Length: 134
Picture (cartoon, rainbow, N blue to C red):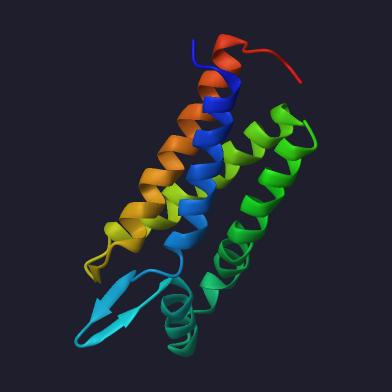
């Protein structure tokens, strides 16, 4: 069984990398490389208004990552692990959606998927094993 500090460290690392992934290159179009935020803005400028709710959720990822660290510091591990799992699913969803499009992608969506997978795995394993409750 993995210790609490290792689990917490993995979760924090996944959140930090997930938040950083948004600023890395997500899409490449010609000579233009766009991060996730610029890619969403470009889609909005093209009139794809259906992405607005997703854009709002995506902008909350760095805030949620910070909130997770605060929850861990406040010794609210269960809430931190639940929120980490949710943010992990968002990271996998956004990264996977970009990787499945025909648009050339950079390292950002790959890092988002990887960090999201770590967060979800850590969260699920915590509750599946019944590791000490906070």
